[in-house]
Structure formats: structure tokens, C-alpha cells
Image (cartoon, rainbow, N blue to C red; front, side):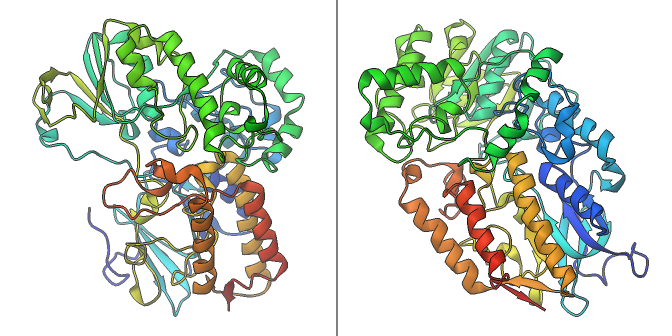
Length: 547
């Protein structure tokens, strides 16, 4: 990849005066919401998206079984009453369903006329004299803008395992986040799946029904919850639409931006019978209410947490016939407290391990040592494979941002500033990089907030702030070092006082070798986060130097 190192080195493809008010990098929920809101307010705004079409992360995530873990009616905009006319075909839409929803939104808002696809932002340079950014794409395009919004999301940079010999494999080897757009038929093939995060769970479910053999390498058991998927018709959609406005309102008051919240009761105070009744009721309903809609002390009290883990383990063991396999999937001692890693939602994940063609391997005991032409090698020998699936996750939160060579004041690189530690103000901005804001970025609620909720709610405060900057004639804004140090300390304090420290998760970078261990998701809850922003706004944005 070749990128221009300075505006003098790059071909000038901008006409004189062709400077946008705002360039948005990323065309998912957050980026498209900014485009529509800012365009309506008279800002000259465009979107660059590295994807080949609408959908954001759902353009990239097209692996078998890829689907949302939020019910479709809540995983959509409340914006401009778009929800009134769209029918979801499934309770939890797959990637094709989400893409279809984005196409519907585009048909209503005409977004794609201002979106450039296949535009990977490789470099961004700040010009202090002109008070503007120049952004270069990997194929040589450039765009000047007074403000840049980086909306790359928390899962934009796939994490590839360091396994010797990957390049020698003669079959198909793909990361779930870079799956072939035209699909991959696994019928009758020998498939190896490395990783059991959400995408691993989803791929295993699908592959098990078609492949000749499925070998699953598990490092940490996924404390997956029942999805309770079902098809929807027009009558189902009409029934849901009846109370959607109230459910949208709940999204802005709930801890994680969903249409439900924790019960104002403690598991520790309930009798065993009462707890069992609650767990059974929520289990029958399925979905994330099992995680974020039950007793309020489950993520705060380890003894209370254990009561649900034991219930969950019992449910898994009821479904898996082989005792040793069941123990690997749901061990007697929890690998970590329930819920401190994001659980996957499954349909028949645990059941497929009863099939003769599916085998589970404990990666801690028998890791993949190398990949050879015809499969993977462990201490016990060769496992033949036609397809290798890398369900190995992402460099979350900061990875997509740092994939861009961002050069701020005096040429300082964001990669250097964040090399050892991320410092932001509210996950929105960082000193030394004026006129740049991050959406769904590190130290915001991102990983703990429903995506469309954040796109709209965080999107509104960004639009409001940019209006304030424009209305007051400012040409430059930059968060102060003091403000971001205080915010980082606040995020750290919440983390250190929580149970999230008890699992090596992507929430704090522990899944990436060499990545500084630091909480990169605001764990204080959506209402608290936006309450703090209200204080910032009321005080006149004093955390920012405006000029």
C-alpha cells in the first residue's frame, strides 16, 4: 500500500476551495446517522467507507450464521420514523437482513449519493495554518475537511493468529471478518474452526449441518445463551410496532442502551426458589435479558453471579450427552464470572456436539502448532482440513482508528500517542488532534451499548457540539489534556472496582498480544455517560479549547 506522506507528495485531486465541512470515515450506523443529520443542518458532508456497499460491519460480516445478537426492532434507527414501514423477516436478522435494512434506509434518505465505497482511509494530516485535515485513501484519493469524524466502530480490525505455516495451506482459510462476499460452500468438507467467540459459535452451528467433519478449537468456553430465534410475518411486525416508541425511549434510560434494564432486586436477597423461577422465566425468553435484564447484583456480587453460572451449566449439561465434552463446554469451575465477557447467543451450538461429525478440542491442552498444506498439526498429529475458519476476534475499540496513520499537531502520530495508553475525553476526542471526533470509540460506552442507540444518542451530542462550534464562529476545537486525563482515571476507577477485571477480554485489550492492558469501554452505563455530557454542555464545553 502506498500513501502520500504530505500534501506536496500527493496528486491534488481537489479543486481549489473543495473543502468539506465534515468528512466521516466509516459508513455503519454511526457514520450514516451523522451524514443525514449534518446534511439536514446545511453542513457539506461526505462519507468514506472501506466496504464495498452499505451495511458497515455487516458488509464485512457475511460468514455462515452471521446475525445480530439484538432483536431487529431494537437494532434499528428510531430516526425520522423509519421504523414505521420496515418489516423484519426474523427476530434476530442475519447479515443479509441487516443489509436489506440499510438498503431500505437508503431508499428513504438517499444516503449513498454522498458515500464513497471502497475508500480505505490510510492517512490523515492536520494543517494548523489552514485549520483543516487532508485525508488520503490507500488508492491515492484525497479529501480536505475542516472536521473529521472517525466512525470505524469497535470491530474494524480483524485479529489474525500467529500460527506458523498459514501461507502453506492449500485449502480455503478465512477470518470470519473477511469472509468471501460470494460465500463458501462447506458441504462435505473437513472444517477446522479456531476460536469460540460469537462468530465461532455461529459458524460451528452452520457448518455442523453440512460439513463432513467440524473440529473446534476452544481456548475459553463461551457462556452462550439461548437466542430463541423465529421467523416474523407482517402481523408480527405490526404487533411489535405498537409499543416501539416506548421501547425506543427505554433504550436511552437503560444501562446498555437496550429496551430493558436490570431488575431492581438482588439475587443475594432472593430465596433459591425465587431465583430459580426468575432464571427459568428469563431462560424461556432468551436473549440478552439473561445478561442485562435480571438481578441488578449479578455483575457486582460474585456469589450472586455464581448462582446463575451454576444454573447455566446445568442447562448445558442437559443438552450435551458426552460428559467430557459437556465439562469442556461448561466446566464445574467457571472460567470467569458470567457476563464479564460478552456472551454469544446460540440456537443449537451445544446440541451439535452430540453429532458424530463434530469434535471439540481444548486449545489450552492441544493447541495448533502449525498449519501445513492439508490441515493443522497439534501434539497429537495432523487434523486434515479443506477449510480453516479463523474466528479469532478483533483488535477492538482502537484498532480501526489506529489502522489510519493520523498525524496531528506538529506531525504527532496518534499511533505514538496511544502506543502505551489511550487517553480521550469521553471517548470522543484526544488532545493534539484538533477538529477530530471519534464515534463508538475507545472509552465510550461502545462495547456496552447497543449500536444504533449509540449512533443516535452519541450522534446527537456530536451534532449539537458541531452546531455550537459553527454558531460561535470557531474554526478549531481540541479537548484539553487535563480533561482527558481525568476521564481516563474515571474509566479506570470504574473498571478496577468491577468484576470485569476477572476475565481476559477484548473489553480491556487482553485478547491482543502486546496490547496495553487498559479498559477501553465505559462501564458506568449509558445514562451516566450521557449525564456527564449534559454537565459538559451546561458548563459551556470548558473541557475544549475553542478558537
